[in-house]
Image (tube, rainbow, N blue to C red; front, side, top):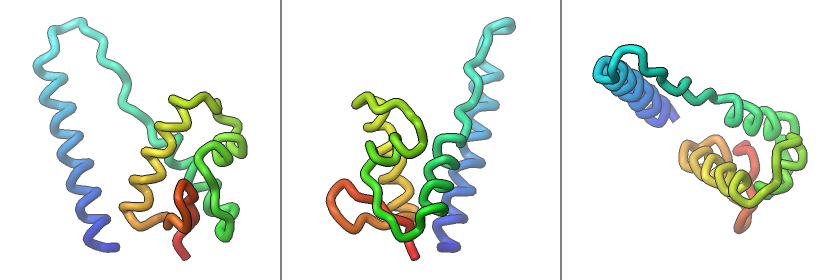
Length: 102
């Protein structure tokens, strides 16, 4: 877990450096898109923290959180859930099901 955290922090530092470099190369007066916030990830993690023993499908999670349930939006959440599995925060007890790691 410590190694995964160190790797994530290193990636975040690299992203911050990349953003600075891009900002320096953009012509003056050009408006940059705001950085993506982690509110979606935080909402997902909070949902799993509130229901630690429950396994969710991505669409069920969207319904619980009051998020749009169109296929494109749910696919983005599936990708986020996959990242959380790879980082060790969640497990995948079945195909398309995600649960908080205990």
